[in-house]
Length: 221
Image 1 (cartoon, rainbow, N blue to C red):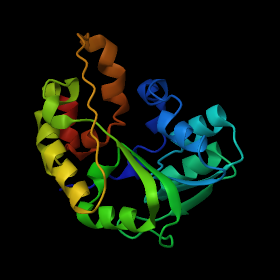
Image 2 (cartoon, helix red, strand yellow):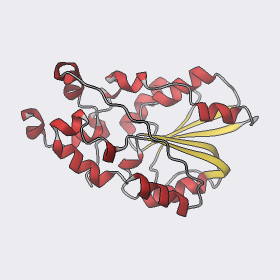
Image 3 (cartoon, rainbow, N blue to C red):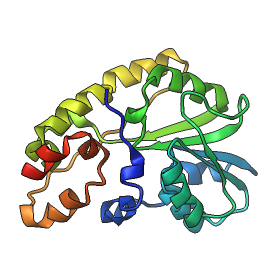
Image 4 (cartoon, one colour):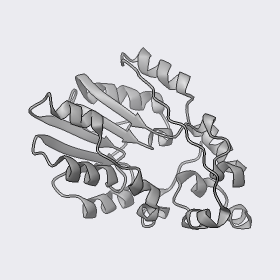
């Protein structure tokens, strides 16, 4: 499994409008706020801080202590420029720098496939999550989207992602084995797109799997 070097995409990462357009209020977190006087929330692999910034602006509550962790110093620097009042730390999901049962809510957006030791990462998440806490993972379902424009024009990307992504069944079983009560929700959509409308995204090359393709091959496509 190849590893994405996020220092290569940190500066242009937020130029992709899809990252902003899909962000909305985290309803699961909002529901948790209504039943708790105080919460510790961790954005695991927080990247440039988009989720943190959006939720802090929408929820506007002092009852949440916000935390963010990322393995890339370049992405974390972007987050530090974006949000304030957040405990931001450099670290990996496989060795979380937190005490046992530290968090009521852990969110993980588009990041789990990057972890080299996913089993250990789940052990760490289970360790720092409070009893009856919530772990929410959000990601693409690559096994159901072989016609995605990225895979269509760059078949090598699909082959790389097969090494990085667990199937839904495997993820479900691994979480259950670790004592989580698991629910998986999958949303499907299909769009007809024009190549010219997606040239920007290809040229921006901020999608992590595209950085794993050899530069020469990428430019030829």
